[in-house]
Image (cartoon, rainbow, N blue to C red; front, side, top):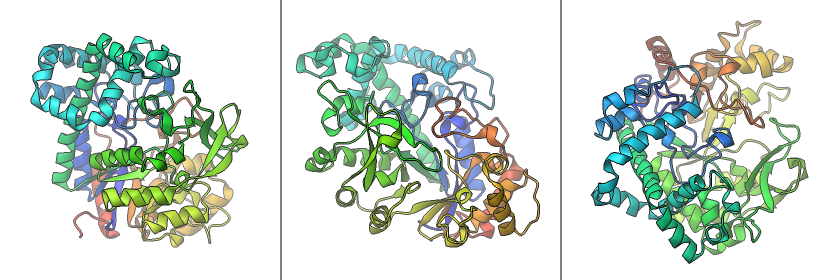
Length: 503
C-alpha cells in the first residue's frame, strides 16, 4: 500500500432525499470530493441488510453476502427506466442531519415494489438478470428464500419456523420455494438492482483513482441466512440454538466486556472442509472492494467464547482458532491478501505473529495514545509502523472534538497539548490539529472520519459500543463538505506526501 490517505463515511451518512444515504448522486459527489482533495481511499461500513429490531446496525446483517436494499438509489432506478421521475417526487423526505431508517425503509420498499411490478412477468427472460443469479448461486437462493420466509412468518427467528423448513428438508425447501415464489423473485430483483448500481459506482471510482475499503465483520447474526443454511459450521444444538456465543472481555469500551451474542464458529468443521465458507465469503468481498478491513482480527488467533446462558461477557474464556491455516488457504486461493487487520483490543504476541506472517497492515488509533504511557504506547504517533492504517478514531470512537470535550481525561488533554506544543487550544480547532498529527504519521495509510473534517462534536458520533440505541444515524447535509474544506484537506495531504497524484 502506497503512502496515502482517505475518509471514513458510510453510505447511509450521505445526503439524501429519501431518509438515508444511498448509491445515488450524493455518492458520486462525495467520490469526486475525495479525488479533488487528493484522497486515494473511501472507507465504508458493512453494506449487508439491516433491520430496525437490530437497531439498524451494519454489523448485524441478515447475510454475509447480500446487500441492504436501503442503499438502492431511486434516482438511478429512474435512469434505468424502472421508475418515472414523478414516482420518486412523491416519496421525497426532508434532508436532515440524521437518518430516518424507519421511514426510508417504507419509502424504498414502496418504490422497489412498484419497479418490480413493472418487470416481474418478463424478469426471467432478462439475460443479464439470469446471469447475475447464476454468478451468485452460492448464496442468493438461500438468502432470497430466507428473506421471503422471514416476511411470511412476520419476522420470527428461523429457529421457530416449522421443522420442515427450519431443518431445510428436501420437501420443505420445495414446498416453501413454490409457495413464496413471487416474493423470492422480488428479493432477487432487489439484489440485482443493488449490484447493478454498485458496479456503476465502482467503475466511476476506478476512473477517478479512488479505492473502496470495505468492512467484513468476523461473526454473522444468528438469525441470518448464513447460519440457517450452514448450521454445521456454527456451535448450535439440534434445534439450531447457539450454546456458545461471541463477545470480548473487559476493555477500553466496557468494564464488563461486550456480550455480542453471535454464534461462534465450529472451526474444526470449517478446517476439515478446507475453510470453504470463509474462502467464498472473502472472494465475494474482495470482488466488491479494493481492500477489506477484517473486523476483530484477533478472533482468528483466539476468540472469547461465552456460554449462551451467561449474563455478561465476563463469564467467557479464550479458545484458540486456526488462523494460520485459514490465511494459508486464503493466500493459495486468492493470492495477495488486500486485508487490513483490525487488531485493536486485547492483543497478544500470537495475534501480532499472525498479522505479521501474512504482512497484513494493522491499525492504530491516535485517540488511544495520550495516556500516562504515551512514551511507549503503540498508538502514539512516534511509535507507528509503516505497514499500518492509522486513524484519529474509527466509527466506534467519538469524534475528535467530542473526544477532547467528553472522553479525554486530564492526563490525556495535558499530553495532547504538550505534543502539539500548546498551553491551551480552542476545542473547535482540536479536530484539525489531530488530523495534522495523523497525516504526519509514517503509517502507509491514514483515514479520517468525515465528521472530523467538519469539526463536529460528540452529537455526530456514529456508534457507542455496548449501547444498543441511538447509533448509526449521523448524516451529512447537502453542501456541508465545502470547497474550502476540500482545499484544506488537499493541501495538508500534499504537504505530508499522501496525495493520490504522487506515485
